[in-house]
Length: 119
Length: 175
Ligand SMILES: [Fe+2]
Ligand SMILES: [Fe+2]
Image 1 (cartoon, rainbow over the protein chains, first blue to last red):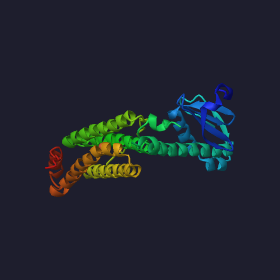
Image 2: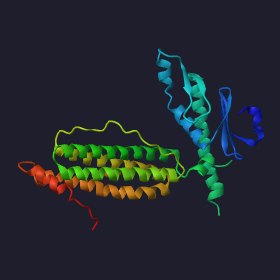
Image 3: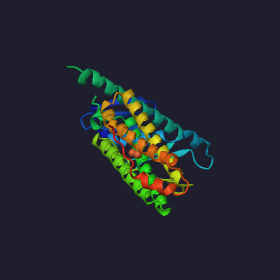
Image 4: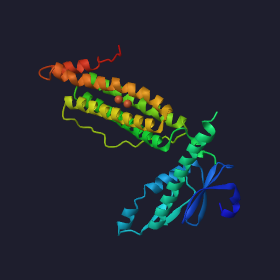
């Protein structure tokens, strides 16, 4: 989905770094990952899968291995998107996803305190 | 902002990962017991072969119990790949030593998950785990009792034949 198709004002910026942003739509219960020249939609499960896969990429091994290019193909079963990323971009994506999930955790705590635990 | 991850799933990703690892461990136990059953059968220990076959089925039930819980809580339960099952044993006694060792490892693994639950204050999963913690009492007791038969009866003469006959009679009662 292209950026223009989504009304940007409806989206909540969960986390950003210099390379990209991740947004949440409370209306559609989904996420948008703005990264690597793509604006891609994810649901809860697929965003978790993306995080797991990116987390598991060993950047050091990628750089030290002289038999292959320093690029990695990032996708997974059932994912509509494919990323071809350099080592630096992978580091940035790791950071982006890590920051996003930290914000999810924080948001969960805030929700607990402000909404769920008040009576 | 909506708490979307929590709306989707009761358990945290860390707990989900630990439970999926446990699903794999139970599957591994099930395969290991089946392998032990095969070895016992081929070496003429019929009662022990039955005992381990039954244990294998129980481990499968444990695996499915965990599997269902992860799915019921909205998580992603992963069907595990099981490899590296031991098929050769040095002797009758080694089979039982391995069985006890495997149960001890499983108990330790559940303690580890329980400790994570406490840390996260995930009392829902903790309550679910209680069944397994209690089950491990019985599992370790039976494995330990079986191994003790080697001391009590001894392997000499018709000892192994005698041990085999008694393995199936081990039962555990809380009272
Ligand atoms: Fe078990
Ligand atoms: Fe067991």
